[in-house]
Image 1 (cartoon, helix red, strand yellow):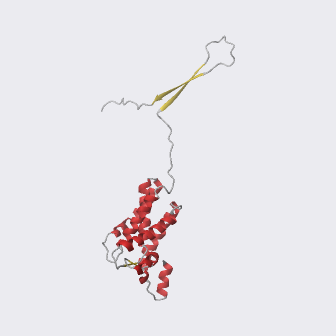
Image 2 (image 1 turned 180 degrees about the horizontal axis):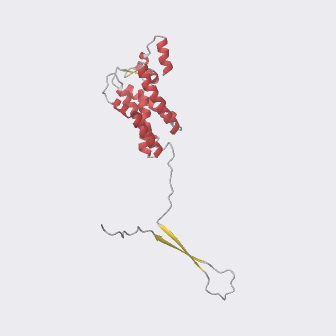
Image 3 (image 1 turned 30 degrees about the vertical axis):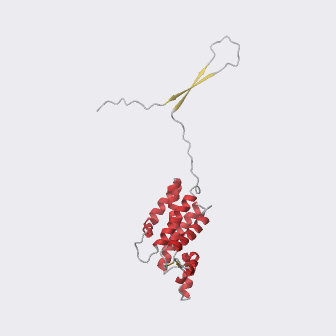
Amino acid sequence: MWVVKLLEVFTHSDFAPFGLTTGELQGLKGIFTMPFLHGDFKHLSGNSVPMLILGSLLYYFYNRVAGTVLLWVWFAGTSWLWFVGHPGITHIGASGVVYGLATFLFFMGVIRREYRSMVISLLVIFLYGSIFWGIFPIYKGVSWEGHLYGAIAGLVAAIYFRKEGPPKIVYEWENEELVDEVIEEQPTDTNSDNTNPKIKINIIYKPTEPPENNSPNK
């Protein structure tokens, strides 16, 4: 993304026509090029920084499916935008992919209920929770449709790959409700010539009961 923007600046070019134009055949190329194009450096920074953070979380915790998820939210989101979006509008930017990654990471924790995945969900909400307002047509000149379809792609990926990710840790707790009592009995026949007396062991299980409250009333 940065290389494309710098190339655009140094060559005094405008790469916006290579964006995704909804509903037009010539705009289909934008399915592949849209995430690399940005209006200015503020727009580029606003997408590249969260892309770096969310992408790192994706590849660290969901490494087995990270590449598939990234390609899915990219191509599914942009394809849906071209088919369903308001016709004749040119979209540029990687914000749809950012929304897809954020939605995937958030819903993986909600669906899996594994504590590490849930921590990632909370982290995404803490860092980028406010971006989800971008799926509504609130801000003028913002591709809210691209955000929306990217977020839907992320949700679909989270549902499909819900069994992936860090394995759940199973804890084994000691059973404290039973008490073992061992009774050792010696043979009572002292005149017996048996040099190897038998030892009888009784194991009695008693459920523990909470102590009664004998404190005086005040």
